[in-house]
Amino acid sequence: MRLVIARCSVDYAGRLTAHLPLAPRLILVKADGSVSIHADDRAYKPLNWMSPPCTLKEGEAEGTPVWTVINKGGEKLVITMAEVLHDSSHELGVDPGLIKDGVEAHLQELLADRLDTLGEGWTLIRREYMTAIGPVDILCRDGEGRTVAIELKRQGGIDGVEQLTRYLELLNRDPHLAPVRGVFAAQEIKPQARVLATDRGIDCAILDYNALRGIEDDKLRLF
Amino acid sequence: MRLVIARCSVDYAGRLTAHLPLAPRLILVKADGSVSIHADDRAYKPLNWMSPPCTLKEGEAEGTPVWTVINKGGEKLVITMAEVLHDSSHELGVDPGLIKDGVEAHLQELLADRLDTLGEGWTLIRREYMTAIGPVDILCRDGEGRTVAIELKRQGGIDGVEQLTRYLELLNRDPHLAPVRGVFAAQEIKPQARVLATDRGIDCAILDYNALRGIEDDKLRLF
DNA sequence: GTATGAATGTCGCAA
DNA sequence: TTGCGACGTTCATAC
Image (tube, rainbow over all chains, first blue to last red; front, top):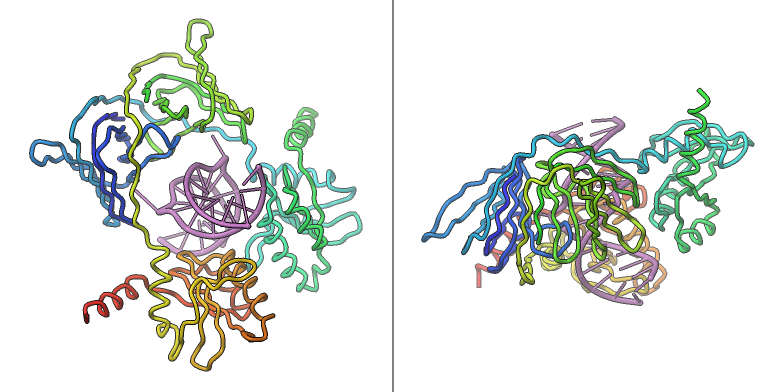
């Protein structure tokens, strides 16, 4: 990883064209070949960048360094350095990587295992039940044997209700499944999404991730 | 802007929980208060980060530096540094910012000028035709004098079809306009979106930006 | 490889 | 503040 602090101007021509006037910035060159240009704001987002695979050519024009980064698609990033204030390189090696927990895939797994938290006697038919317009997160049967389509979200917004509505419309055309109930399950459901869901006869369920995981942990502890 | 290279382990507890085992990484502290942790891959994306507003507290545990970053929402990032390999600070000042030159509004302009690419005798009524639920990208008449609502997208997804459906529903209530056809026009239309559109009697059109622009260029060259 | 949906999405605009 | 759509979205995964 190479860190360069320089007063520079930058031009990008690719999916759009962009220009950065002369100013001091950080230029970050990673071992993967990527180049990104950071200002002292915009949080983690660079002003401009080039993703690998790409090639960096360090050239010169009238005594000032000019870096040209090009990728396969013909996108081009040109960095003109009026003044280099810092330049250092560091060997980091391969990163062992990130361990994530608490994303939708995990929620789905947990809920599929604990459908009884939604109601007594609920049984799983399939996770990621495939339809022509996409996979239903969970398809199951309720205590009375009715088919239920569950849409899972971390944040329950209107778009999730729309999604579930489309699935229900489609699933209800299938005589083997109809009538199909809908359950909109999320860690948090926004008021407007709840109103819309209720209006369409879709039930809402708030998921407690820690409780689900806790139950799971308890279950695991038994064995 | 402060650049620290350190062998560190990181724990994040917030919208999800994540852990990074001990390894050499770049820790980037910006003047806006943000902290991001970069490995030597993943292009411009950090392994972990905290966006401003947040507070960084530099502490210590058994002789090793421990940084704790907390934001208003109670999200927490803890960086434990086993070994600091580099530490430098740099004044960059406020960045003059980015000048972008994009394509999205341009597409609408081009298509409005070349409605005949969709069919013979098509004529523009209005771009950005205002309705109670938002502006229809293009409203026009087809060769047989029927009203047509066009929804434009660079990437045609299901959400775009939904949007157009809502417009059509509304427009068809207006006796001056009804019946109104729908055309979903995009540079690329995803299969599922096409299925949904077709199912709802909405026509799909693929736009060739370069061709449209080329035609436009030719036209411009005449004058 | 393609297509599809999630993302600690982020960002910006408007009601 | 919330909602909504775009992003050089990027990213992972199922087909």
